[in-house]
Length: 241
View 1: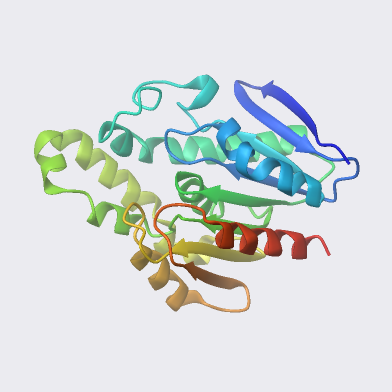
View 2: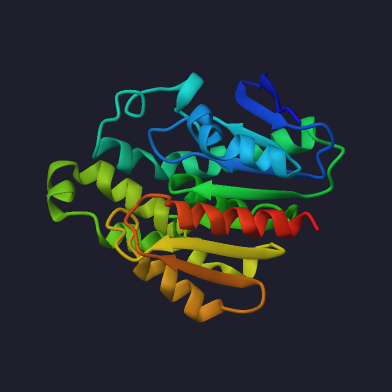
């Protein structure tokens, strides 16, 4: 069985679609900071399409085909301080794209990698159409990201740092759990992750663990390992049954 790949654009949103002959579910896959739709699809596209999904990946705002400074140049720390301002617009893009282009599906699943998951947790507060949510090396606790920002950043870029922190605190899904809509939240994280520390993820899980909120931990840093990928695929395949 082959995978059909379509490169599309709607309303200035560039996106890719991977699907096999008879897809059963729809899943959006969102890339990390400085990435693009092609990068997320190179990892997840074919396995998910082979499993039975229509797989959609968009370029986040200011990334990929609609790239702008500082994301095209991959310029930290400016990128990290700009990222909070693209969370809501990118989440809204996904909702708009789903409603306009995939009317055959009543709901969709979402897999967010790093920044893609940060966008995704906010997405859960905006729509009730997400069923299975897969948060991969990411966090719902935006405050944990603020806490790890070095003091030198505030000193060198005081206004930009303050605006970024204000935005992150206003959006922080960890403080808005009652506003989240989902069928299940499944989180996958590394014990040694120093880019997105596990502390915020663990605290969120400890506060809200249930049959619908789970966390699987792996001996890795900020990377998706083979065991983590196998666990993700096991969950996504189980959702098809």
